[in-house]
Image (cartoon, rainbow, N blue to C red; front, top):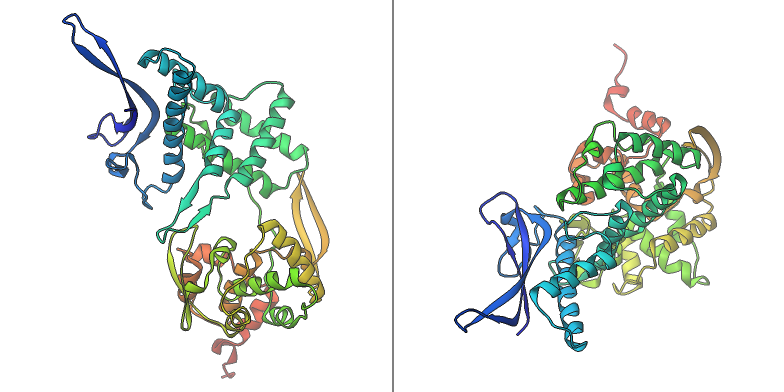
Length: 435
C-alpha cells in the first residue's frame, strides 16, 4: 500500500533536515533472486529544531515557540499531495513507476507548479518564491484550540508587495534573484517607490515584507545572501495622524437612528462592541454567544492565541441584548471601513483635521473630515485611549489589549497636547495652593 512519511535526518542536532519516504510496493530482484523493496526518498529542503517536531503526527508541533507551524506544515502537505497525485497519474497513464522516475516527475512538478523547488533545492526567482508563500498563506486555514477555524489574511498585503516587485522587475527589465536583494537593491527600490508617489509608511510595510520573505527563504536553505539583515536595510516609517473617537462621539454613533438602513445598523453595533472591548477585527468576527459569561467576555485572540477576559460595558450589554447575544456576522474589513465612514458622517463626526504625510519624497498636508479617517481599527484605539483618559491603570488595560510593553501600548494612545494639558490640570500637583 502506498504510504508517505516524513522524518528527521538527524534528531540529535539543533536543526535537522526533513526527508520524506514514499513506499509503494516497488521491488527489484537481487542476484540471489530475492525481492529487494525500494522506496522514494526525497529531501523537502525544510529544516526544523527537533524539539518542535511531532514524530507521531510527522508535522511541526502547534506551539507558540514555533509560530510559523501552520505555513510550515502546509508546505509538507503540498509535497505529500504532489507525491500521491503524480503516483496516481503515472499508474493511470500506464507509466513505469520507480523511485527514480517518480522523483524526477516530483521535482519537475514542484518546480513547474511552485517555481521554487529544483533538484538543487535553490529558487530561480525571488518573486516566484513569494507567490508560493502567498499560496501557502492563502491555503493555510488555522485551527484554534477550541476547534474553530479561521483564514490567515496575511496574503492580502503580501500580494501588494509582490505586485510592486513585479512592476519593478519590468522597470529594470530582469527577474530578481535572492542574491539581488542587497543594499544596492534597497536604495534603488526606495527611489523607485518614492518616484511613483508611495507614502513612507507604505514603503516601510513593503520593505518589512521583503525582509520576512528573505528570512523565510534563508530558513529553507534557498538563500545565502544576508545583506537584507544589515541594519541599513531597514523598514522606514514616520508618525502619521491616527484618530480615536471620544465618548461623546461614540454616544452619537450609539444613538444614531439607522432603523431604515439595515446594512449600516449591524456594522455600527459591532463597531461599538469593538470600541468598548478593544477587540481586533479578526476577534470581533469570531465573537459568539458562548464567549459571554455573566459580566465578562472570555475569548482567545486570534493574532496572539492569548486568552483574555473583558468586563462588559453597558453599551456592549445593550447591543448584545438587541440581538439576544446572537451577534450579526461582519463583512470584509474593507467593506466595514467603507460603511463606518458613512455611519460617522451621518453622526456628524466631521471635524476638519490636518493630515501630514510624506509621499513621493515630498512633505504634504491636506485637510480631511474626521469621518474619512475612521476604520475598523479605530475601535481598538478608541478603547485604549478612552480607558487611559478615564485613569484606568495601564497594566489593567494592557491585559485586555494584549500589549506586552508600556511603550507599545502608549503608541495606541491618541490624545493631543491640549487634551494632555487638561488631564494634567486635574492632577493634585496642579491643584496645590501657593505657599
